[in-house]
Length: 360
Ligand SMILES: Cc1ncc(COP(=O)(O)O)c(C=O)c1O
Image (cartoon, rainbow, N blue to C red; front, side):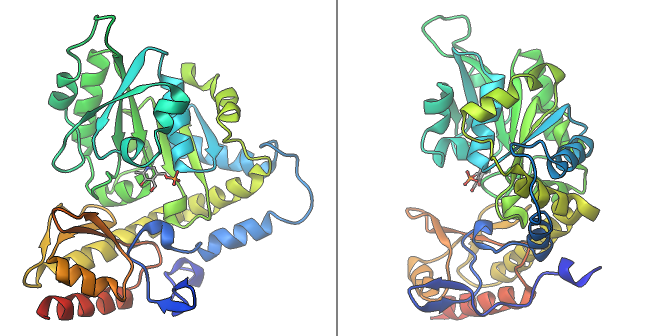
């Protein structure tokens, strides 16, 4: 394995806040830097001019690579995950239609109402224990069908891996897809962390995508600087995508630099190496934390997130030196996330502090 494909050594420059230095962040995979191979691909794409808005060789290579990896009809490079979601939903929805999704879905909790504002849809949310929706939960939201006073469910949106660090199995996805097809519902996947799901389930991107009508594929949390894609699986859906991408402000003029990032991630499946590593670091962290008295791991660790319950005093003590989110203040649940560049040494150092905080 070439050296630049290995996670880097712990970087003591860490996260800087007004002159203070912190160790590796467990706050988000977005806190990580850029994989060296991605940075080099951007630099390699830099010399000389290239035609803007995607009429360049890098974009041609990236879209062909994504089409092949997903068995997709087409792929559209975009700038961020929220943009990919809004673009995907706008392709799949008619004006009077609603989206069924988990309460914890990013489209519901963290996109500032973009699907409602920009697509004009309504989100019909369902509570879940583990971030995963089921055919039964979807069925509960179909009661208003045919009533012209009610938004008509048109799309089911899943997140894979979920916001709670769990993964739908391929069988679970197939079951949901069968239900959707039988119920005249289209299926969208938020794949901001699809790479982590593919690595966790040891399956291909195409296997994850085949049940969906459209999905996003995140590069940013996987070592890119900022690169996401909307993958369109059904030929009838692709025609409108270029126009909607432009209207939704997701068409970058210097698209070659977004494309170069995907080309680096797709080369020799670097995306899978990065995701497998992040997942392995989350498992290591969870296994270590689970042995500490007073700490409870609250969701199965199936991707690169660990959700743990611990005493608020211990949370506060840990936050003096470490960056992570308190996910549910009322329930004392925190989220620890790992990334492609989290090292075993980072996890060991964090675990040592977790042990001493819990003992205090
Ligand atoms: C599940 C999920 N979907 C989508 C996104 C996209 O976010 P952004 O628009 O910040 O790229 C995120 C980012 O945290 C996410 O966690």
